[in-house]
Picture (spheres, rainbow, N blue to C red):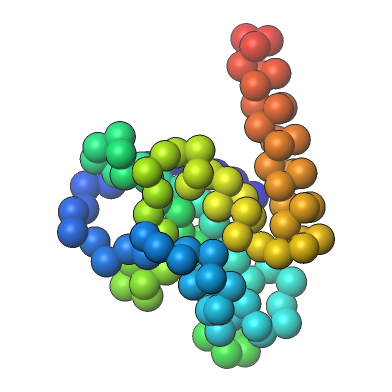
Length: 123
């Protein structure tokens, strides 16, 4: 799962700020039975206090999954706002999941974070 940081210049966006995990878990596409229903990326806003996580793929019903831009996610009401970059990254990595899926996602997140830290250190 790629975690991408982009600079955005949109204010007054209708983002989900509370009960984010519950909102994402209750999306219709998460109940579709597909393996990869949500792949997310992180985005940073104008100020350092605004960080976002949003899905990067979308589909409706039985149609094929396709890439989703930040603006499409915003229009669909699927952009989640956070005060810190770390929280947005953890949410995008899978902290919103439950049970075994959450444990596996967070283990992969920690492993990837450790690899990035080692690569940075070796430079």
